[in-house]
Length: 142
Length: 206
Ligand SMILES: Nc1nc2c(ncn2[C@@H]2O[C@H](COP(=O)(O)OP(=O)(O)OP(=O)(O)O)[C@@H](O)[C@H]2O)c(=O)[nH]1
Ligand SMILES: [Mg+2]
Image 1 (spheres, chains in turn red, blue):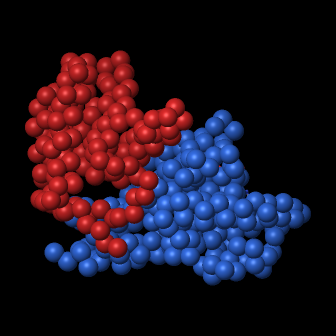
Image 2 (cartoon, helix red, strand yellow; image 1 turned 135 degrees about the vertical axis):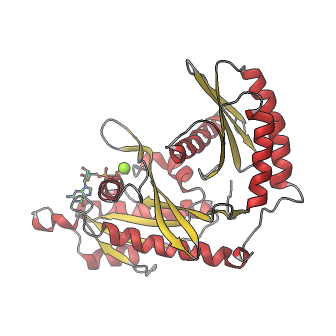
Image 3 (cartoon, rainbow over the protein chains, first blue to last red; image 1 turned 30 degrees about the horizontal axis):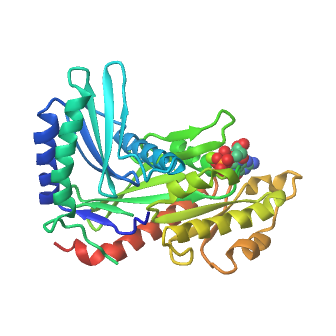
């Protein structure tokens, strides 16, 4: 996959992304939501957890996703669009949207995986229309 | 692929340390991590095997100051140098904005350095990038061994092998002793940021 453009996002645009995440995921009980791009850039985070190593989380998530995509190819799949790791108290759900972004949702055992799946599906539809729609301001500098 | 967040006035660019296995890429990052202040340097992540060979990558986030009112964040990665890890090298190269190539001065590594540079060119091409156009510097590492009786390549030989066609800046270094490490990082950071700003420059005027 070629990822050649530089992404430039301005404040109003970030605000729109934040609104969607708050409404769909945080209001449904998710603890923290992070958007990264497939190369590991942290695009934004929302939520109540204070994570000082957020850029490590962004980078490792992107790497994890990229590595599993290679595994997918080995078994004849294009890639896996979602990943889920279950912990004792806290779980993490990753899903890719578009070719370039991954939305990462952290949630505790008060919230069901089914709900997070449903809600992140909805969030992705809305986020995609912001990031890729006509009003999206993804710009191609070259 | 640099990422520019205008809500926080921040640029993130991706720098990759490339080169043959055991050449000293991880040692460069460790030195930077240990000697820079916490304000500049974030947490270092390494994914390695027991025997200290990099398995996937090392990662070190740096906040290096401001240019034109924009905070500059540089995400530094190393690749695994061993030949068999080419798939992971390609993954780490995705979205790269600049490369520091760490060449091993040990004479026995002469051919491996050349092959690793060729491998870099090939993998960049896979990303739609040209090794002659991307910001790039060379580092001739392990120069401290000149005092030992281990056979080393001369700088002239390394220039001839690696830099004849590229003509990019090069630095003599010792990642264990620390000399040349900052010079390498400073030059490649400067070139990378300049390149990113040039590419997106027109669009930053709001
Ligand atoms: N004498 C000397 N030894 C060095 C220098 N830089 C690295 N080394 C040693 O060389 C070995 C390999 O260094 P690493 O930094 O792990 O090499 P690498 O390029 O990350 O290797 P891979 O992860 O396998 O690609 C280690 O034992 C280092 O201590 C140097 O400047 N001088
Ligand atoms: Mg290493």
